[in-house]
Length: 197
Image 1 (cartoon, rainbow, N blue to C red):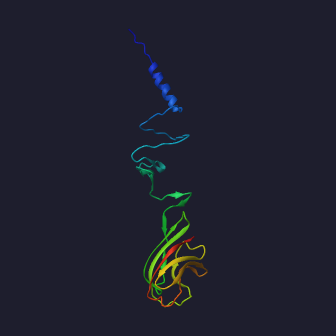
Image 2: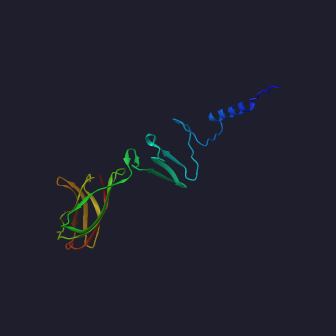
């Protein structure tokens, strides 16, 4: 009455699995843990928000960095300490400008350095508060860091004609204004533009 075990079906399924793992067809796993993975061809990730999570130094956090498709055709990179491309940061760094308050008051400004582009972008608003002579250059702000690699023209909007530039010299780096007509004292001025570092 001994039962003879028939493993034909098991052998068939093992053979089919080996064939899939060797590239003939597709195989599906709910989860896989492995020390390393090498693939030739492509990797496809499915889901309502497909993503790749990184666990730096075997962190037990949900992730230390993440690449996720948050909407159709829209990728988001999340990294608490910033994202770099070819070693250059994509985040903007604040640049400090120090105003000469004898010449400009009522000041607000934004100055940001982007390492990836190698440039500082500025947007300045203020009111000229000194009698500035036509044709002369006057320092309005000193530049604390990320100084220009050369003299760079900036855009000026004012009721009086004027030019502005970001300048590096032996006396230091500054954002300057040069009135093109008299009577600029008391007028609002908007200066925008960028310079390469």
